[in-house]
Amino acid sequence: LQVYRLKPESNLSLSNLGHINWENLACLAIIYLICYFSMWKGIKTSGKVVWFTALFPYVVLAILMIRGLFLNGSMKGIEYYIRPDLSKLSDASVWVDAASQTFFSLGPGFGVLMAFASYNDFNHNVYRDAMITVAVNSLTSFASGFVIFMFLVSLN
Image (cartoon, rainbow, N blue to C red; front, side):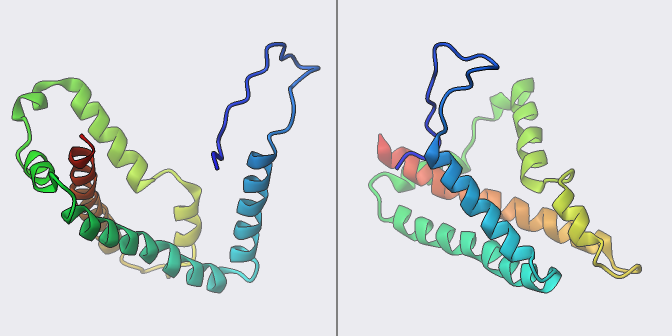
């Protein structure tokens, strides 16, 4: 099932916006319901949801890493990942892409982080939390790179 399918209309205008994409509407309704019920009873319920949503991607990452190790050419992908082309570091677009990746993976401007932070005590050690967040994010990105390169090389 292709969830995000573009349905182009040739004569779109303000009076004719096209037809409803029912698949997108159903997914949006499900997402709204999940958000509503995860925040229904306050921070205690959302804390339980966060345990699942924070740990489940690591389970999937571990499964994909184990599966990737048994693919043909996976070691070649790991070698390609570990031995990068250092001449690319002089290209400014590489640094722009790296900064964009860091910004979007850490999500410093998202309101959710500020909303959860409002439940902390006044003297809470925010510096420690920031360092843990950056370290976990960096290690996750590094581990994800192994999985991506194992699968990409095995596809060729």
